[in-house]
Image 1 (cartoon, rainbow, N blue to C red):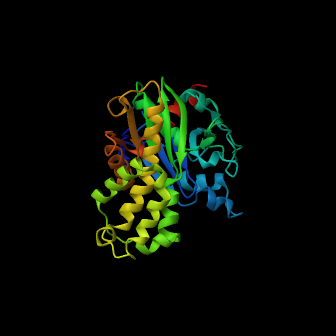
Image 2: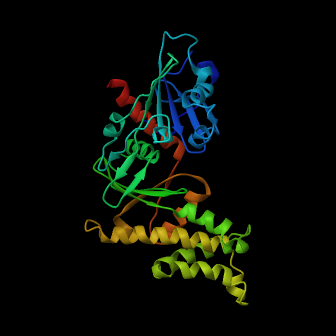
Image 3: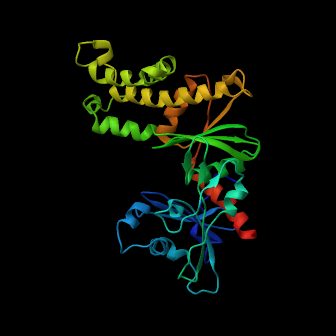
Length: 331
């Protein structure tokens, strides 16, 4: 399956899509009309994510979905279009809870765990994919597992760790065609809280320095127990007259400290894996994401000797939904 779907021109678009892919997040929802070759015919998005629907009694998941995709649907009910949804529509507060699957899990097992809400519109059939849970070292994900499935479809022989940077970054162990385990880090949320609501907000500005960021990442690895102290130096440097430290952009130092702490912990885990020796040369690490954040993670990993290429997150999400659609369509 291609992980970089093409956008068809309107002239080649059929009367209705073969199926519809939906990623329903906490803050927004994205939908793609797909042809039978899993190429994109059209796309749409809305700010009516799970939180907005939960906060407004006038909204419903089915109503928001139909409002988003109605122009793609047939005018009558002679054909039912399959809609495959990942993300927060399957949460307890969502449309219909899709219970978590436990690791280890294979992609087809995740797709088989899809739930089907009652639908009043006869033109669609909706399947909501489950999330993933880990009982030992308790952890959960909902939405990211679909990206992992898309990545695995494109890289069937991959054996290593997949990083999904974000507000709550995920690190998943993929091996033998299955998701074996994962870890979540609240790195993005901690950065947002500290940079906007703590005393460190006075040290944030628009400046950025890659060298300072990378140096702070290395410091996080060499002094992993000094995280909280390193944070306060961001503020204190400008107050004690330390010109060198005060000239360092606060955002670069704070980013390096929080991301560096996360990366250092992951690298220590890799070192504890008895199957991995000389980890910087052997361990496979992949990044799912794009833009500045994925770039920062790549720089942080490079500071530890890892070369991790970033894979486009949207394309991988669609590939994961397409993989689930195949299973659902034949079940």
